[in-house]
Amino acid sequence: MPFTIEDNVLVACHGSDEVVTVPAGVRAIGDGAFRGNVHVRKVQMDADVFWIMPEAFMDCTSLESVTFHDALDEIGDRAFKGCRSLRDVDQALEDAGCYELTRIGDEAFAGCTSLEKLEYDSGWWITVGKRAFADCTSLTLVMLPDGLAELEDDAFEGCTSLKYVSMPEVFQQSVSRRRTFEESAQAIRDCCPSIVAIEGRRRASGSWSETEPPWSTGTLARTILSLKHPSMSYEDLADQWHRGDIVGLLKGYAELRHLDLAGFDTSGERSLACLFKGCASLRGIDLSPLDTSAVEDMRQMFFGCRSLEEADLSCLDTSQVQTMAHLFHNCHALRRASLRGLDLSRVKSLWSAFDHCESLEDLDLTVSAMPPVVKARYLFRECTSIRRWEVSEAWPLRHDTIPAPTSECGMWWSAREQGWMTVDQIVERGPASDVFTSVPPKLACAL
Image 1: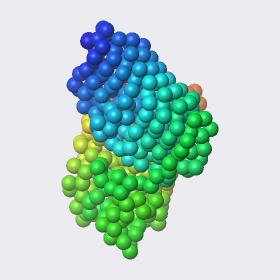
Image 2: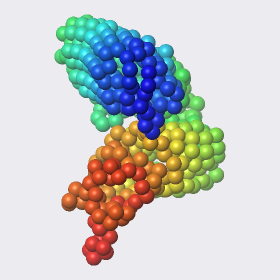
Image 3: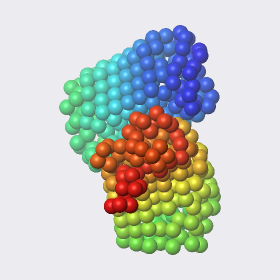
Image 4: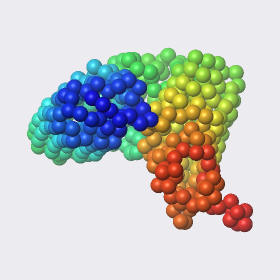
């Protein structure tokens, strides 16, 4: 079957083949790529696919099975909506070892009337969107993973046959709000008249052992943990986390105002995830002593550092980094941030990286390399103070990678074009080195 592929995104398929194998090198199945295809019955995805974009397989009424891989990170909104022949989604996820799946989008599987059960319990951080499984009228059993972070109230609306649900009794810290087991359980009961039992289970022993732990594991991490919990050893902390004995064990060291990183050996460190998460008093930090040449995971590294005012990452080696999701999420005081010169060629996700950075004014995005396909949902949500941002040709200019204009006219002033541009015009022009401001330079000087 011939395909149309642009920038590693499969944007369309052609023909009437019943079995489709996605070509190697495709990183995402594009918006509506298979939408309405009534011929395809089976889809086999290559190991490079990490993103199934909105409506990718919507209304593929003959689709019975799909093969995922462990790289899968997000199933987008309405991705499989109306696939009324689709079965065994849980088996596809489990067989692939989809531990990194972070989001099942709004109405992702709505109207999949042949889906009878969902037993997916491998992920360690996942959000389930609005009406994600709505009107799956044959669905009788649901098991959600220990890493459940968010479950929308109407996720199972119209699942008239749903009888049994198993989910963790304590959710992971939600991205946007906190939900309790009791609230979510009642919402399911309200939507599903056939419910017999909703189980709230404790995190299973060793449930994190099959994946990278959600914090860093080297010398620096041990030091941070010793500051937070001086009476306990790192081994004790890790053991208790694996047993699920302590909820919120790794909350930030709220009183930490300064940390000298000189002398710490971080060579070989693969993860800096959550390292400074919740360090609410940290105002600034020199990251230059860190050896990050092996680091693959920087998600939530500064999450909730609400006093942090400046962040310069230009000194870091990010050539192996694959995710920066929620990097500066809820850094409310952050005014300046620099990614200058960073090699982001392996990055898959910048999801919510600057989410709710309401004070951010100056942003340097002149990266040296970056793939055209990067998950950037909510990248600049609530960034309402940006006055200046600079990009290189390597930065892909899409609607989700451009900050919302903060000028009175609702546009950005382009230094390259010497004129005002709407976001649509910036996207249409395409990637180019440029400096965008909310006020023309001459006017700014006059003010």
